[in-house]
Length: 304
Ligand code: GLN
Image (cartoon, protein in one colour):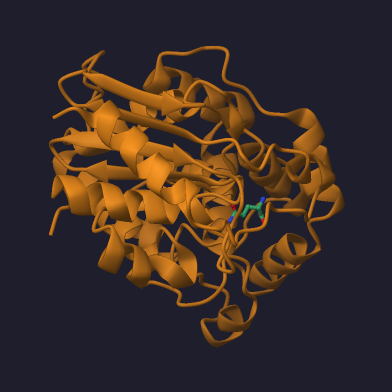
């Protein structure tokens, strides 16, 4: 299939539609991104690569990093992970506080902020140098050692992270945070600040399309059964209170971030990443969602 021609065609169609999205502005660094940036990268499990637009420009991956931290934690601990974080879609915004009280400090899933903060707590318990080890894990998955945190963004996340601090304190009061809050949040804010390109993200997520094995290195990251579960969680929880819409319209497991990136995986076939910074009201890339909907419709390459 001539994917690059399809990308161009969909891009041109979307150019005719007004972009109703807004670039994230809760921290100044994110609001400075060019709203017209647009990149796509598809990588197949056989190693073919198809790119369009700004596919090599790095951007703030934000919540997409929650998949990396979750997979790393899941590879280190047993299934008692699920005593501390659930596997149900939240149906609420990514940083919602309300559910946590009813759920007695146990977040619905690892991809909402509260769940990702519990995952960071587990990594702080399990690892000697959590930040460095998360970064090395991403280097291993991507094959690119220059991927790094953006320290200015991490600092700004911390300075403005009132809701995230409320979440962690609330969970601590229920006994679901075991480490010092500052250590946990330092890891969380740094993970949010990682910068990667569409190409790097597609390559890094490819093991989830390949039964847990990185195709180009042969490294086994997760068992087949745990890979199935990671994909199931992305399918049901990867887009906060828009997970149903994404499944309905795109039909792939995926994960979004407030930097405007979306990564989606077709098991046994490919991984695709789209980046377009303006976000819809749910915090997902406005045109990224439309692009992927058109892509799986035109190519008939959804999992359903
Ligand atoms: N840094 C953001 C936060 O913690 C990440 C949220 C996102 O990408 N949805 O609020």
